Length: 95
Image 1: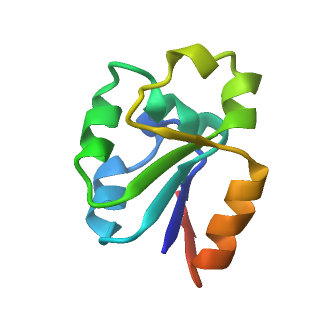
Image 2: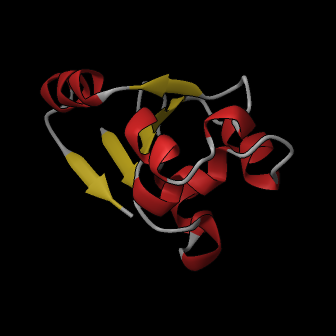
């Protein structure tokens, strides 16, 4: 399943999101969700320990001036990768 986090991690139920994640799921951080990718963030450590791939959308990082502040544990992807993730996963959950 593809999970997309579009809200700030401080504005969503991150515990419920984590409980829904399964091995081989992908989590894409978009819009304000990219805040979860900030270097040194508690959320980065939590997400890095989950059995999933975590990515952040480059365009949303750039729009917020955060590109240089993202943890190396988070993959940075573009819109083409977003489309590929959507094609790869039959279902999607937006948080």
